[in-house]
Length: 107
Image (cartoon, rainbow, N blue to C red; front, side, top):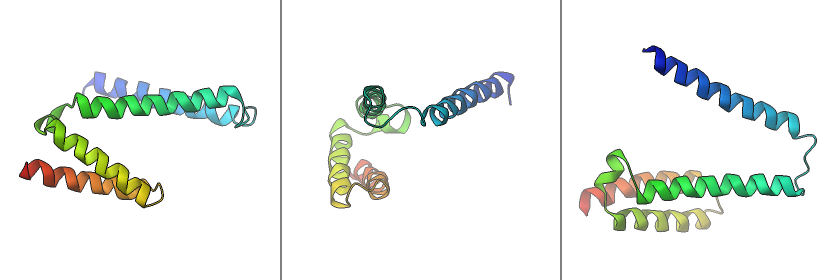
């Protein structure tokens, strides 16, 4: 491995574990009903939504071979599966991978 890869892994690991540690330490102080907690919750959901939107609209790699229509159909169908299975994340994740593979090969 090159030195830069090892350094990147160390820095990202430190950032991940430091944020988790600070979250664990501050969890005793911050109440779930506080405004700061709600703000961080909104920030987390907004970041996740932006990453998903970026993946769908500006894909990189293999996803770039699929059309916009296929990507949007898979997202809509996966959302339906998500709500049918009472907001379970496992089923729509598996469904989206399988349906994306099928639709890309046939459309």
